[in-house]
Amino acid sequence: MKLDPVAALLAFAGGAIGGLGLIAFYRAMSMNLIGVVAPITAVVAAAAPIAIGVAGGEKLHIGQVAGIGVGLVAILLINGGGRTAARGARAAVLLAIAAGIGFGLFFILFHASSPAGITAFVGGRAGSAVASLCFALVSRVSPVPARSAWRLIALGGTLDGAGVVLYLYATFHGLLSLSALLTSFYPAFTVLCARLFLNERLSPTQLAGALLAIAAIALIAAT
Image 1 (cartoon, rainbow, N blue to C red):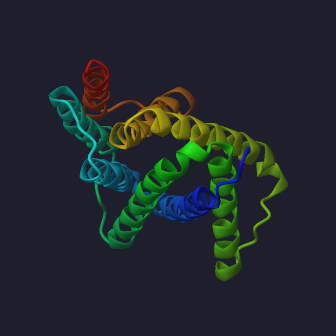
Image 2: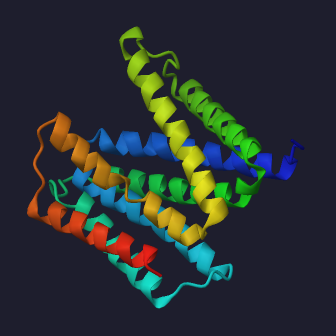
């Protein structure tokens, strides 16, 4: 396979920016404001690629437009059904916005590099690793995790890598705007895992969001 240096550079930049966005997301979540952080991050991340895709000439059918609108509302409801903002949440909100921008740019840059296939994947993983290592060095945090966390980290890394591969495939064969929106439905799975493994219950708002998410996917897929 011929190496595409431009695609590799775009993927590297996307991986680096996405990695920094993930760090910001984790830092914001650690402030115990999940109900505030998650919707902001998801909506910002979904909005950027949709805007870029449409500006770049992507044509959306009326059903797809409706699906995108319903999907954005669903993302807000799924994520916003928990605790409300507390005093002093400004830092968490700013980090959430930064994370959403990072994820959105990741979607855009990986879409641009997706035809390169494995080159894009390797470049993105390298960018994420370099950005994370640089952050650890600058913040003086040890890049080596505790041994007790290795298994979970390995599992998380494997699932994350699989998700990147699937996103590359989706964005190469489909529209950037729709691929980015569907990817942003990840909170629904998070809510489900929390219910199964942490015994957390869906609030009425989150349940409404889950039903709207199903409706949005149906609208997008039917057109």
